[in-house]
Length: 299
Image (cartoon, rainbow, N blue to C red; front, top):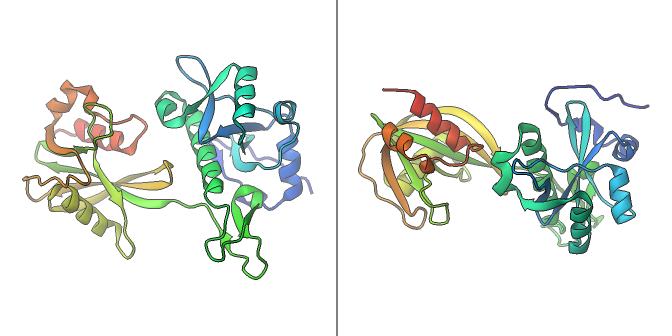
């Protein structure tokens, strides 16, 4: 039975359609569907100052590659089905770039310039192709795996094993710590010059997320905190984090920086941050949201 596409606003994962091989095949070949090419985790964008994603049709892919052996169904965005295709060959990627007068770019470098649709779809396409490249073999028996469920499962080819692997995210906490009229921000050596951000770290096995907040701030900056309050979440697929955003109150203000984790950590006033916009992290990050919300909340 032919399934109708239900128009929704934004991203519809349409997970129930992944096992419908006929629908997936027909929809992938439909010229109304769009395909996101990914090459070595880079995404295809036009060359304008305000980059836009370059989407392909099935006809575009066939013209360039002759056939397509594998694709990943991402979902339906504003009524349009989207797929990802991993372009393994450097030569094929170069040909596609020339045909479309576009360039494969590191997503992080252009993400803040993309609109919401492009940012969400390209991030997901990049993550899914990366996940497949890292799960070619079974971690249980060592045999090769195969893709299933339109690219959302990998299954061990060894019939005696048959282990299933699913794409997932790793929970991490990210925290805006404040003390009166100041907030605590840190920086890593590899970040752009002058940039600071909220402290963050992964949740360890057996921890609650509140325990992870207390441990991470203590380990990285030597600060004990309380009044921990959840604020927002954000998927940050570089490569696979689910960021859980919190605010917390510092019980003390003497900073002891763990140099294995941070290059520096400092207390900043609102005036400090407003006077030097370089301090702020990427606008698309949850860290930026936590900091700017604090800036608007005068004590």
